[in-house]
Image: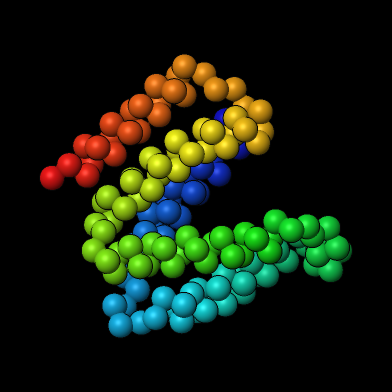
Length: 142
């Protein structure tokens, strides 16, 4: 059970700090300049963790296994990061921005899972879509 739960717990805790840090990027700082520091720190931490967790690790051997995904993921992550920075600069509340994007994302990923990965589209998932849409309405209602 712990092996199933801890990864999502890590995502939740990291996401809380992510939202706090993203909202705390100084107003006058260019988001892309901020991201250069973010990714330098992230690259250094990844390198340290790779060797700490793989005592006999061979980074070049790992790089030989690479496909398109890490390259596209790098571009996509920049879109996520700068999107949130600009959303917060535009005035989105930290209590709302994440919820709105998560609800929209949940609806989209149900269809992505169905179309790309042949995941089952159940009545429960359809009900979940309705709940997400209702939640979006309520969150954004003034």
